[in-house]
Length: 118
Image (cartoon, rainbow, N blue to C red; front, side, top):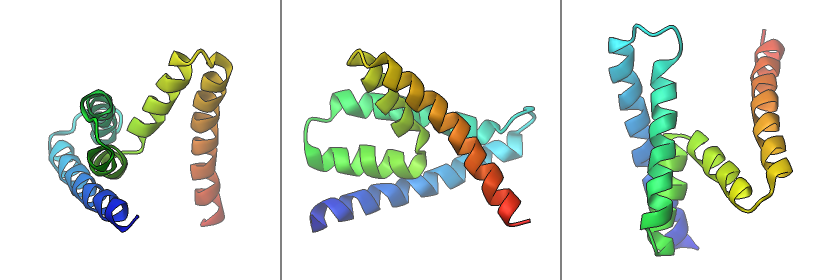
């Protein structure tokens, strides 16, 4: 258990730092009408988790790269991967409910947090 925790922590630290650096870099170049840094990081994270899910056979590297790195880089990659897994398992209604619920409740939770702290 300690080994898995250290792998997740290491991957998460690297992912978080790379997300920060990507955001700093993109913000300097940003001329987009939406949060381009977050969008690009989320899409790249989805791409990475897709690659890692099929390329990494062992649990240790999965903890490091999927749970740790992708989790620290972005949680959207995990959301996308889990949704695709539901669709691939022919669980269409749960996939749709998960997607809609995550978006609506996620945005609602941000709003609520902002409202409470005003």
